[in-house]
Length: 232
Image (cartoon, rainbow, N blue to C red; front, side, top):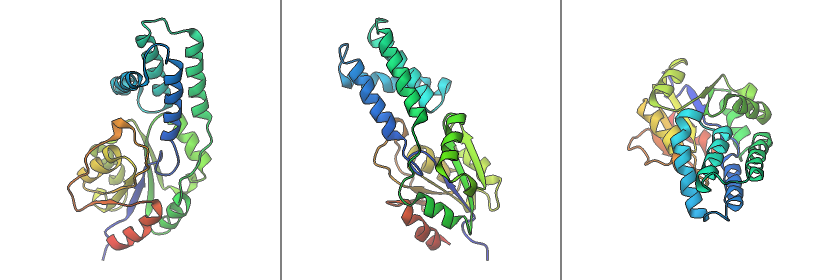
């Protein structure tokens, strides 16, 4: 009898390795640099508006974040932002791009263990070169049977990626820390969706959980193998 699961998909940022905390640290620096012009709450909201507005043009990742910070700095200062502030924002972005990868607990052991019995796929969004570099540095690159770096995660994305593997979307599972990108669209595509909360969540990735028997939540990646064994 065929197994219920044949393919396991993993998100990358904040599922396998730390990511969002570096954005939060850089945003705190941004708010400090612009503190003479407006308060942190206004800067937070203005930056979020810029990120939401620019995703379709810049995509996800550090480069789009830095451009949105610069745009916000220009707007809140009515064009008077000093050049040295722009330079510091660019330097902060360079630091983010160069930051070493730090795997989350259980990431290596879990992915390697599941690779013995399942097709393992990485499905991540963001800047192509940066995501490729992070994957290479993670030590996990050789474990994955397939890697998909996409501009957005939609039901069609999961239908296409999982459809290229045995069992298709119906016998696939997506594991990630974003309800909006990793869980809801995967479940909509007919796959299983497993939410692994990271603790630091980007406002634009928030969503209500799906009302589906194919939705699960676990505390850490270490809880994933027993869940998969239960599903079968």
